[in-house]
Length: 140
Image (tube, rainbow, N blue to C red):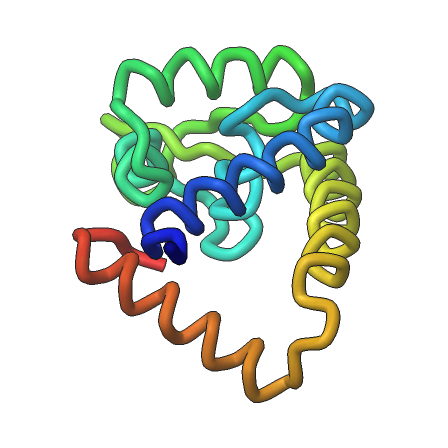
């Protein structure tokens, strides 16, 4: 009997996590930090609340995550120029370097995972996964 799609997604994600987990430690990152770095690199400075929303993380959890990242020099918090009551989270050069190294490791794994897929199949898989994510309330 073939595996259901939800099982295949979980098994694939689990293999990916196991393969990439050592890279987190080597790069001085912890779980959850790469998606914050990616969001900041893509969007620029964000409020803590916006980061929590975009990264699908509880606001209390994002606060703890950002505290650790700030201590590690991956990001810094600054007052917002537009609204003095809120702050903005900014990516540091060290954060950019860590993200670049992380993305290189992820791309190596992705290359292995998608070996034998045509470019059209890769795009189709990306489209399907983005649509499935949106269907469950996510924002790619």
